[in-house]
Length: 76
Image (cartoon, rainbow, N blue to C red; front, top):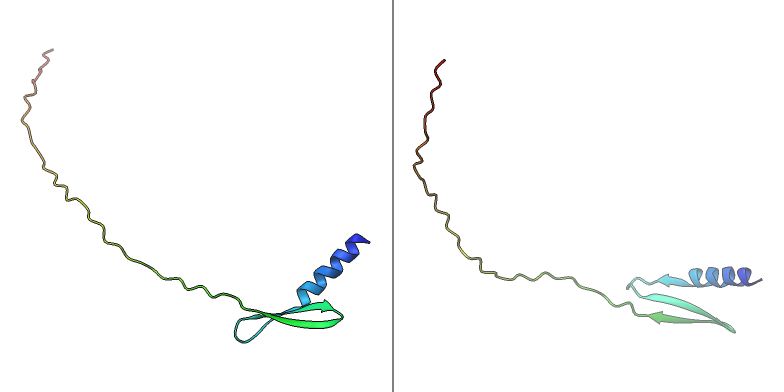
């Protein structure tokens, strides 16, 4: 019995809503007869913001060195 009541309430709540041309929702409440209420849905605007970030300048200096490598000769 409880499952049937829950399914009935769910079916009424899904079918009792409709969207208007302006984007608002109209909800019909079950009382003696029906009463229609209009819910104003808030709009959301998404914007982007830019920020300036200072980045340090890094200089890379290549250094060279002379290394003496011993030469080994093997005689047979």
